[in-house]
Length: 156
Image 1 (tube, one colour):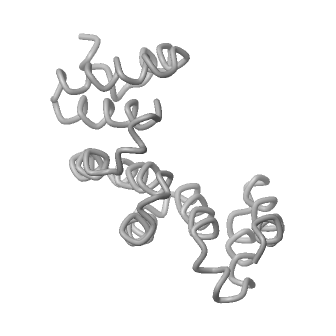
Image 2 (cartoon, rainbow, N blue to C red):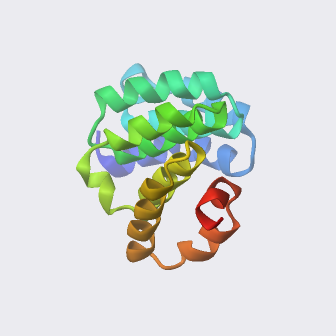
């Protein structure tokens, strides 16, 4: 299937998602052919829906499988870490990110999330290193870092 055609198949579900109609977005994805439902872009959208619905355990289960099956898709790691954080499992979120593909290390969001996880576990030196790596990649994260309650320990 041509990539642009596949993207068009997801447009209705994306539209519902952007409107906050998460159940309708999910139903649109259920209408896709089996081959399309297993595509990484479809799975990423399903993961986004689960995160928006705060269905942490379902998001963790889906994300963990996708991290194993689709390692080249960095977004699975960030989204699964977000699900773990939402569930309150900072330790496993940190471990997932530390074991993520090296390609993710270019992302400021990766380092920011890693810093949050480290800070919440009391690993302040690791949090500071991750924040510096984040800020080196994108200075716009500086204000976000100051405002994020998960990083309070870093600023004490």
